[in-house]
Length: 283
Image (cartoon, rainbow, N blue to C red; front, side, top):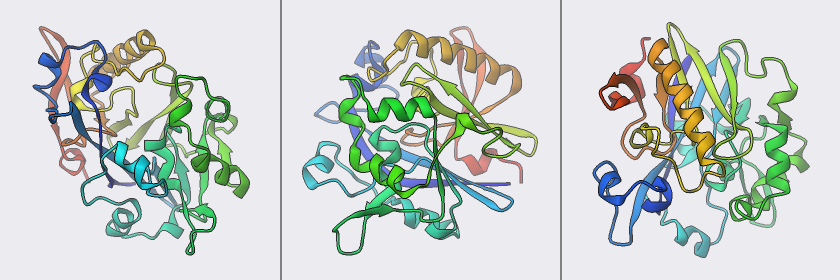
């Protein structure tokens, strides 16, 4: 197995929204904000090369929405989904599986693109199965008022219309024996996290349960979460397991660090070391 970090670009979100009830005086020491209180966040995806399967976890927000929509989030950086996959040595047509942690626009938008003459949408990865949890798909296509603005029909309907939509909870070991799906409900209904066995290490794709190293302390929970108390409990359980089993935590939004390890301190479980994924993996 090989793991490749995929850079789908950066965008900006309000710092207060990203840290919920935590005061700015605390979080800005970890993630600085600009004059509009916006922080830069990476849309970091993960490419899993495992035997005859090439599995892409999340796809960023894509570029098919109009300039007004893109302007809300101040897209920046040189990262681009397909180019980053090509840099890793693969083409879009080689991806066998697209695994969505969840269907908020910044995680699934890149899975669908305009066709050449911009008259219709098509799948970015024409030969891939597109995976999500069935209950999460139902939520995304019948959204509650809180999440309605982040579930975009243009990101979803082309997938089901293509016939390439699959539900991971309806299959046994849908991603093989080395990649285990774990479902959590604090951020949104049945979000998918992944435990990936890479040789003698376990890499956990944290999705938006812990989107960055700055969110490791249990009370540091996003204002976007639909069930923040449940997120806190999920984090506590996951961090305790990570401490006991020496997991490597992979972040989808951290602006600087791919991943981290954790250690127990007098303040509780905290970041031990953080950095690039390649520096932690044993090949």
